[in-house]
Amino acid sequence: MTCKPRLFGNTRQIRTEHRENTNPILERRWIMKHGRHQPNSSTHGPKPYRVLTGAVVLVGLWAAGGCRGAADAQPMSSRPRLGPPAHEYELFGYYSARPTYDQNFQVKDIARTGMADRLTVLAYAFENIDPTNLTCSMTTKPVNNRDADPDQGTGGGDQYTDYNKPFDARSSVDGVADPPPDVVPAHGVPLRGNFNQLKMLKGKFPKLKIVVSLGGWTYSKFFSDVAASEASRRKFVSSCIDLYIKGNLPLYHGNGGPGSAANIFDGFDIDWEWPASDAHPGNHHTPADKANYALLLREFRRQLDASAEADITS
Image 1: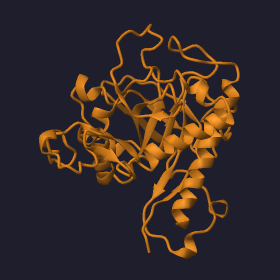
Image 2: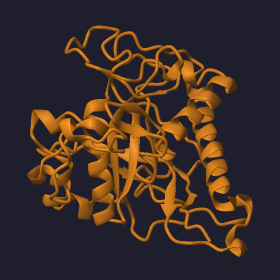
Image 3: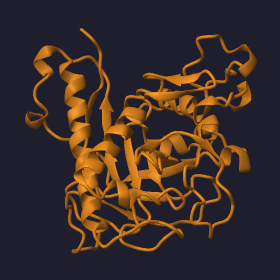
Image 4: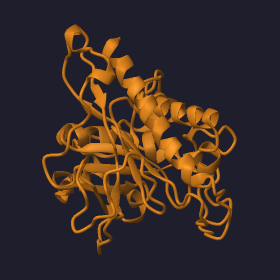
């Protein structure tokens, strides 16, 4: 019998609570408990695929480890969905690649400062959309500092920091140095960089869910395009699942390859800023974005469920 994770989840609506925070976890967001209203509110009931302009909808894909027998491989429709969390709220934090350099705040420091014990969901931010293929993108192109540039984030990415950068023993979650680039064997090393550090963090804190955040202020330019039609939504979501859930990273200087990032990310944080509204200069938007956003989330849910069922029955 093959051990495979059981994948399941719900779309959850969130509200944002900004707090002063000197740590590079950029901001904390509270995810609303499934099936309950927000405290002291009668206007924010639990509605599936609710569109929150200027906020985030978490498309959760949770993995429950362990082996499952053939008797447990029932169709997705006949199995219960993810139930409500045991506590009132989940604490949701962001970690971006920038603090790795700007503030020397590494993934290891999420554990060192006690944040890994407090957070229930950690979002690794941010990943981009390919401007030509309208798919999830993994590339290396520096983002300039000109906020008024409509192409500031177009095609931007940082593969090096994501899964190629070697960490020394002092900076690594497990206290072991990555092999330096000049001694990487011919067949390559599957992962280094922040992705490998996140994998180790998850191993130390198995209750912590890690999601990849798509978009953000600089990388939301093409969300309107990927959400515009059924065909574009299907193509985009399929590419995201292939890249981040199945972990099929493009090879980059000996790192990556098929399945190299599998079992790191439990889902997606869709940080579209913003549907049907101005945000970063040059961002595409139309009045149809509001409806298309909901359809995009629905497509994530459909394909995540299909991917989960395929894992269970294979």
